Length: 224
Image 1 (cartoon, rainbow, N blue to C red):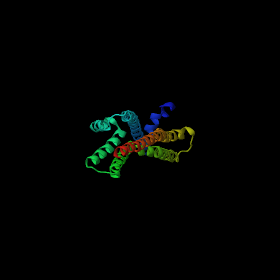
Image 2: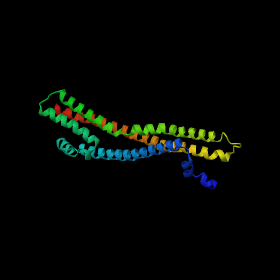
Image 3: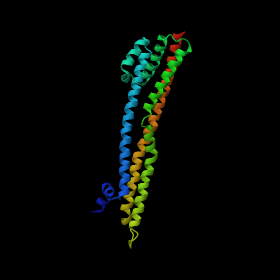
């Protein structure tokens, strides 16, 4: 095997010690899961933003809220998160009116229902973000662990050699540094995606929160 073949990335991975290979395999699995969650969350947030835009257009078009509530209740998944918050509040409001509840209790029930629905939707949007944050913070250290072990293993292997040259040390160090590279490859996209998704989720949270206040104002005018 010529020196170029010996120092190819694939050869270095295959020739690495078992602990370093296990670290590399773990980082590859983490990276695959991270990218899966990134693409999934990207699609979820885009769909949620599109559904929110459509629902707000329908809500502020001046149509009958009872009919809108019925449309949302029959197709809850298609209308999106904000529509489900509206549906929860409207359902509680109509239930209170049918039971002839009067005064602030009518709005209190709708407010609690929408807040509960709001929390459920935010929990759903926050799903897997903790994994991305953990991947971004832990993966470099996992890779560093593999690197330290690999370098230690390389120097221990050279302990009995009569003459130590750079050519003898280079393959062991190179295969160890691959673990750090894989760790960074897993961490950097996870950190970027986490920061972006957190920003998008926070903007949606503010949007939902503002809608709850505006909808409660509309309901309050109907109670008077």
